[in-house]
Image 1 (cartoon, rainbow, N blue to C red):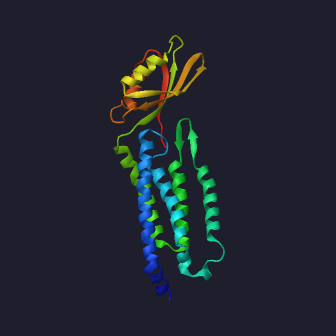
Image 2 (cartoon, rainbow, N blue to C red):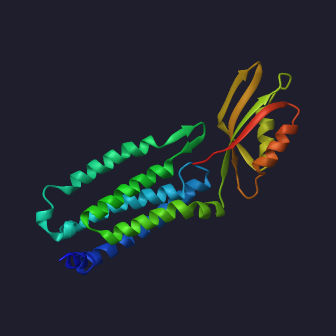
Amino acid sequence: MLTETIRHYWSGDFLAANVFICLNLGGALLLGMLVGYERSYQGRAAGMRTYGLVCMASTALTVFVGFAPLWYGGSPAQAPGDPTRVVQGVVTGIGFLCAGVIMKDGRNIRGLTSAASIWAVAAIGVLLGVGFYAAALLLALLSTLSMSSLHRLEASLPGRATLDVQLTFRQSFQPNLRELAEIAEARGYRVVRDSLTISFADNQPLWRFGAEALERSRALSPALLAEELAAHRGISSFSIVPVRH
């Protein structure tokens, strides 16, 4: 009996439905990566992995509704009530959990990919629950691939990187934003002017701003930037932090 039940889920209409859902998941990953690469190229927090996971999870939670007659083995007796309400509750609850793992520290945003992966895992659970085992397996494999390998692909593609720069100037030195922008541009960076914050500590001006590399492969490395800042006569201390996600 158990063997027949397992064979029932892996043959006929069930197998065709799983193949269709799998094709949708593969297409969703590619389209999500396409949009995510544009964001990654611009140096934004959410990149190819985050967009790919979210797009796949959204697809999984949408496409299976079209195969309602096949849920739970196709037996109406096993599907009392409206399972879509359960799915809505799962997605809502997982949304609160996802929000809890996203943390912002200055210009750094951490946890976006983790939040997207938690949502994708919820979609995997839904697919398993209604009996689309092959689709759930593929979504799990694609999600793992997205988190483990896409960052290497993302790093190898042309794109921009952003640094969180903090400069403490000496009391006798008068910093100039235009000169600072010209110096940054000569080294392959653009000062994000709307990110500039100026404060004073121990009567010393403290500037904090974002520096965006126009092209990762051509911009001066943070290590070489640190050497130049350390040798600058007007800077008493500094910090350079790559913006991560």
